[in-house]
Length: 378
Ligand code: NAD
Ligand code: GLY
Image (cartoon, rainbow, N blue to C red; front, side):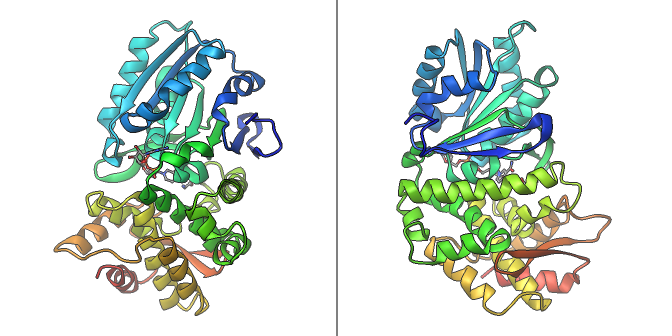
């Protein structure tokens, strides 16, 4: 498909001089060359960061597209395939590979991040610090990266047992979501991305939540079946929601961007404490249930919210709880204390107040927090 054809969706992330388009459609990769030139990117050197799995599937296609667009050097570097690769050591290996391949300041590469959130987060960080910043393009290959991590410029690695603690804000120049690349994604990873889709509906958009719940042509079942029209429509809604939030609070200073962290306080702590037994989206699903129980205990959310959220998560094949294990609660509690929203021992939670609505609550009594966490460990 031609990226300018009517079935491709274009969403602009409005950030003044750092604005950029997000293109969503099926078959966009082949049209990448003209898109780059249209965005004023005239480089002829490319550094492609991917991982072993995605590289084996898609690097050669991307390389052919880049060569066809006039790139004379295309250097490939691969991360290991899992979240555990999102670490300082791999980050420095990427920096070394960039320097080794492009030692001349006159031959700065355009960086392409071909992969899921791990490649996008680590690579966006490396692109932001190499020579104090080189431009980069996100080519998300997971649903999670398409709807969330490739947009908004939060790029980081995990460090010292804390998620995303070393990082910067660094916006891409362009995001190209070729949703055709999602055909090779495992069902588990597709469901993991759906967790973030449900998050957007639950706290940002009643219309999206009800669309997913309903029996229309672009509902949750159609998304699970990877029907192109449902994928593009739903992913584009999520990107529009994220773009609107990011445009208001790019640097996460006004409390507005916190909405995107619904389910992430407990979710991130669980993801790390359970030694990556859960995918990011699975941990967030459990975290959303914990946050919902917390909101219910505080009398903040109507009674029908929890069963409706639970029902969507269950239909998506996502977990509502995680198997308890000795010391797990204590590890989650310790990790949660390092949450970047917490200040001087005061906790901060993003809590639902109705479908598509949220509020931030500070200083929630710890025994109430602990009860909500324990309720998702079974
Ligand atoms: P991931 O990058 O680990 O990818 C998941 C798995 O899918 C990997 O094993 C990968 O090899 C495989 N894969 C990727 N694309 C594929 C394809 N097209 N076909 C077959 N297999 C494919 O995980 P993710 O869920 O994409 O991202 C999770 C990460 O994103 C976490 O580190 C999370 O913290 C981060 N994140 C960041 C933001 C942000 O705003 N920066 C937002 C949400 C999540
Ligand atoms: N995924 C959280 C954010 O972008 O702010």
